Image (tube, rainbow, N blue to C red; front, side, top):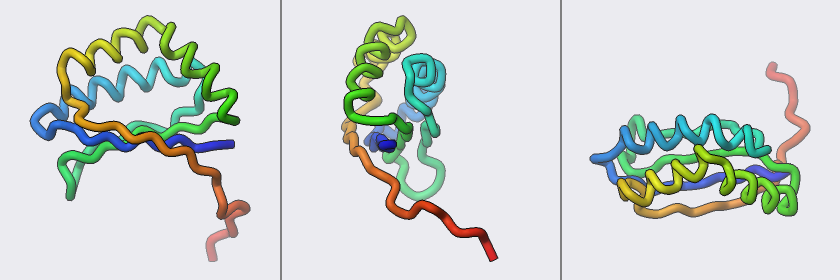
Length: 107
């Protein structure tokens, strides 16, 4: 299992745009085959960093997922929304593998 962490640099004056973008992905991403952990918007500290986090079984599964997401009507609408409103200034995608499992029981 891989975890994809997307780090976004957003326009701090357009935080509500990012919130709508995140809600849309909350519908389209699971429908397209990824296990969405969530989208996270700035709250305290940085006003420009936001994250999207989901799990996917493999890089091959990721390629299939991306095709389904690109074909999804809400996915297409969300891509267009981001392009039109220009609230995403930068997007970095990293794939990580869990290294700490199994986790111990709390004492």
